[in-house]
Image 1: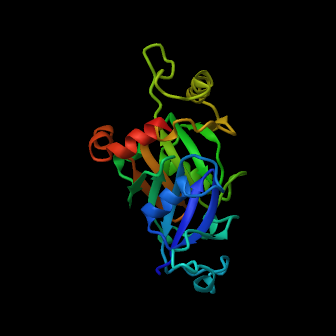
Image 2 (image 1 turned 90 degrees about the horizontal axis):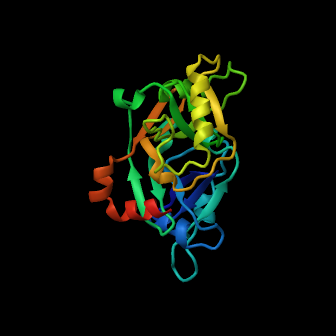
Length: 254
């Protein structure tokens, strides 16, 4: 059986080997195991030709084997620590978003375009290897440069984050349909940025709620480091309702 590599990148990070294809793996991680609490799942497909001195891969064919009855090995964990920093951008492929009932949406990476580079204020949910919710005056690419610059007091080798909807009503408040737990605090952080704060980014929450997370995605997801940025465009609402209706109904409920 063919061995696939997947990197889990939601709430925690892990590199996993599996005989399942991406849709089957996403369904299994959402509803086919008792090891995880019920919830959404996100993962990257990793180049099966991955070579690494950090990950133990030389004997993976002996460790990731079918069950005695011939059924596929659904998951064999390779690493659960410092995974993203040891996966260079070229080996990271498509991104998959799984809902609580096992629906899986595939996003294909592309180069960031002008529409994906709007400046701030922006609301970013960092996903891996750190997880704060922040507002930032920086465009997504500039945010990657800021967060992965080792000359800064705080930096990470590589970062994955989502760009979230930041719609405000006529009074300046966060739109009521958005499920953010502290909307007034978000507005306060934005106002501090707009007053000319010496920091281009301000933390909203160090441990944010991920309630109805997929409903809050605006432009999509970004993965980047000093070598470049991969942009995973999120479908427009009409495409979600027409082309991915089952996934969207499930995502909207979770």
